[in-house]
Image 1 (spheres, rainbow, N blue to C red):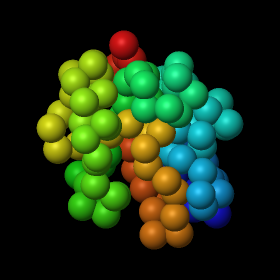
Image 2 (image 1 turned 120 degrees about the vertical axis):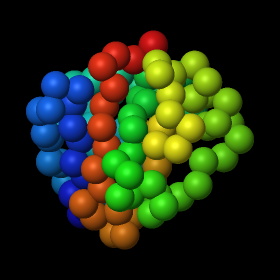
Image 3 (image 1 turned 120 degrees about the horizontal axis):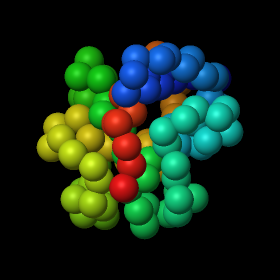
Image 4 (image 1 turned 90 degrees about the vertical axis):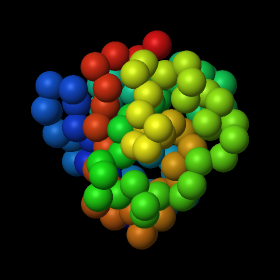
Length: 107
């Protein structure tokens, strides 16, 4: 298990144990973390699981592919460096301690 730390826009922290192989989105959804809507269920067909990866972790998560880049154009206030779709980040033991910041809203 890897601990993923989700921080809501208001500063509320949620520390969740997520199984390797699951996505960061599934970890939030399965543990009731508010603010990650995941309307498409993880198909990379919306932007409602958008987060900002903590700057300390940006270079440690796998790179975005072109489909994710395209979908991030629809996210609320995307950041070119830290914005990610949590459905596209597979949890591995190397991501133990990953911190993601949930935006004020999802669109």
